[in-house]
Length: 100
Image 1 (tube, rainbow, N blue to C red):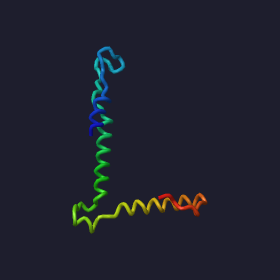
Image 2 (cartoon, rainbow, N blue to C red):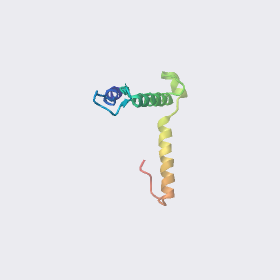
Image 3 (tube, rainbow, N blue to C red):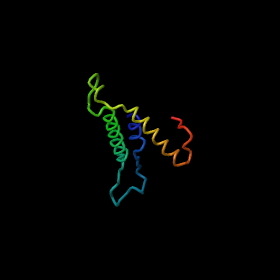
Image 4 (tube, rainbow, N blue to C red):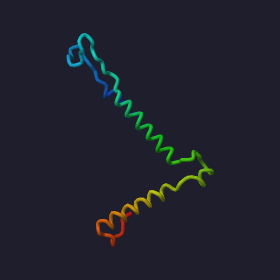
């Protein structure tokens, strides 16, 4: 969160009275609110919440969660092994063992 607080202040556009490029007739366009930084914050925090829910998909914590949660480490290791096997076989190096 500290990064986004700093980027809100750092990415804001500061305009001065002698700047002619932000004038539209008699009106001065003041772009002091960093809209894209706020949108970036919303998307990244949203994806962090999605990733947090994927770790515990049933919403259970403690002893009840032991029976219903997935073994994500095993799934991750299995995906690495299968991916390495596919790559090694496609490269013609099926006789070598994967590093993982």
